[in-house]
Length: 160
Image 1 (cartoon, helix red, strand yellow):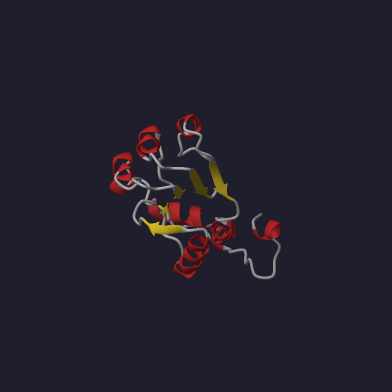
Image 2 (image 1 turned 90 degrees about the horizontal axis):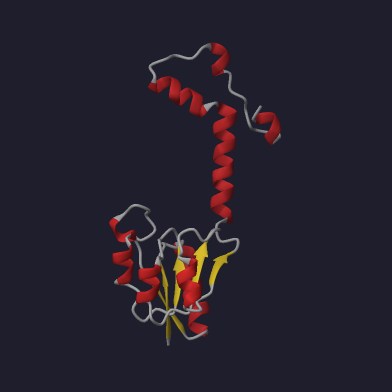
């Protein structure tokens, strides 16, 4: 049986389905939680090297898979990134070993939509300006305090 390691915490509602699908392909899925917190000790290349023995597929969040990690993963056959971009993977090291690096297209669509909605609300309600004013000990005038409701409005109208 091959081994796949996922280095981010998938939604609990999805993990069983992921395991079922992979088991049908004779792949065991292991979750290494704690690696997706950028800047955490767990996300260091040294800590990742301790987890890659016998791994055939690495499913990454924001972890840095550098040359040392890729070299230590002697059985690695594919690297997949959630979201977009390959900036956290040493592409040259992967290429030199013949390891494809791919993205899981659409895997972050909910996150992107939530972030976009949050930005719409922040812009329409002047949250950042109000926050900065409060930090500076200022009270904003009545004109600033007029909030533009988002309910039943188009994005462009709510954010002007």
